[in-house]
Image 1 (cartoon, rainbow, N blue to C red):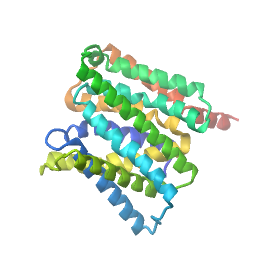
Image 2 (cartoon, rainbow, N blue to C red):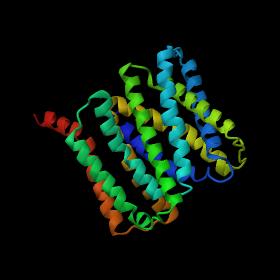
Image 3 (spheres, helix red, strand yellow):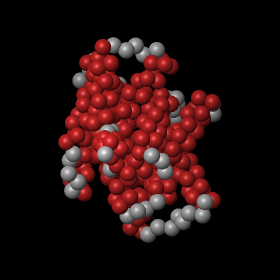
Image 4 (tube, helix red, strand yellow):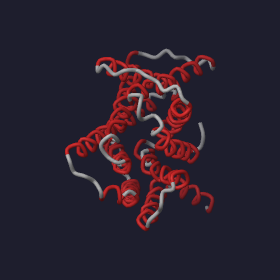
Length: 300
């Protein structure tokens, strides 16, 4: 399904743009309703595509338990809590907390699957997160340590851990050699169901904004932000592991920053340049070993 670099860039560029697109979803429609619309439509399209292509959608009960777990962690808790966290804290602080997934995945792979922690991945992830701290330092320096702000931090932290758990479940699916498209489609369907049940139990109203801003952002998030990006990211996990793939979450805020510069007039400062440089350096340390081995073979 594409080269490692292509998968990595696809996930980074698409998710980097969704930071801006998601803001078009906020306001009238409840976050839980938007999540149900987004992943419900994405899963339906992927299941339909699988049927048209003649792909089997039959899986065992044990495999559906994996799909349900991934759906709960990656397509329900993760997104619902991230949406709500931004009610209390800045997007910069949310970006920093989300980038911590690189560490959660790294230690999760060690604890759950016994995979040794690679020093270069650990150092690269540390540099990348430090870069995010510097990029968003003005926002972080203005952090108002009140009970609402700490609630936002807690929600974003739980969301990050939840997403990391979803990544680790994906590793289990890949080790069973389950097809990425069908397994992701079922996981999204389960995530949609969990979110729907919670929303109905909480009395959340399902409304929709019938305008180009909301509907356009919804279709963008369905086709690109959900189907294309998750296909790339989950396939990347299968190729390089959850620890390396998690660096996507460190690079995504940098892409969002570039788009903000172009579209919203964001002004760079000294720490912005230093932070981006550290993130790029960390990126090279995490992802470069395969390229270096290729270069060595060519030289030989």
